[in-house]
Image 1 (cartoon, rainbow, N blue to C red):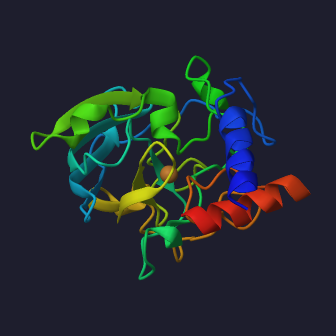
Image 2 (tube, rainbow, N blue to C red; image 1 turned 180 degrees about the vertical axis):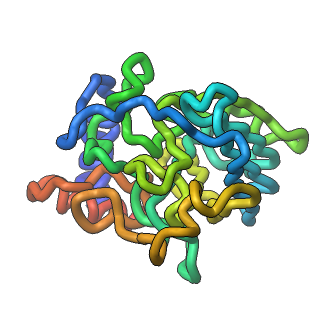
Length: 241
Ligand SMILES: [Cu+2]
């Protein structure tokens, strides 16, 4: 049993390390424009494994893309880094271990059986922030926050855009094995309701992926794929994580 589990996971790891510009079934993500600079979304959270995580999203000064600020400190040093992090499909809810957050924000149905190619970020899952901009490094385990900021050309603060980040989504920080270390909801802390979605009907909490989100991993190894091999992977991952 242990041998077969290890073998399957090794195969998955090998597959996940393949870097290739894979376009989603609905196409590449278009660059976003007209993102308002007065709309701000934040996620602030901590857990037994992460002392603090803070992410801030606002429109870039020219409205092209979204400016992202990230600060993370005190990741449990015994958990292996570097640390991926993503926008996930659902809010944290009452479940344990961040499983209720589902899979990654993926409105163009790319899934993540093939890792994001950061040189072609339009092909990556929209919510794969670390795939596009880099994992949090080992410094995130320190007490002093590790901070980074960047513009993501493909996120949107417009509720009518498929790449809108405000539709009851969340942020999850993982260890390098995709185990979920901490998570928090994305909430609007400033902005105009007419732009940011409060004026529309009930916020959608539908998944952006094409099938049931995987539980307990980065979410993506199994999305939209139904082969027997990957079914076995789900079982193996469930046993381990
Ligand atoms: Cu994630």
